[in-house]
Length: 72
Image (cartoon, rainbow, N blue to C red; front, side, top):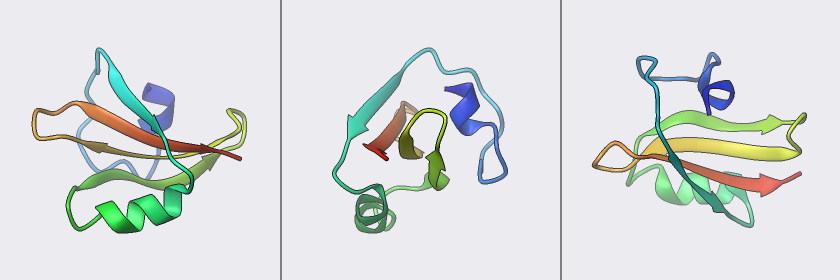
């Protein structure tokens, strides 16, 4: 997860996550737009070409890291 979060759109202090909840969505951009008023994203939607994915990240109220992704 550190690779996904170690970049300029990262909006919180660096921390070590023990696990993450990873959710496949049909369209990361659309899901981001729907959720951004309800949660605070810590990364903007971005393409991880080496992974073949587009991803974005946020945390739930308990601090669990949540990733939404779609295949490129």
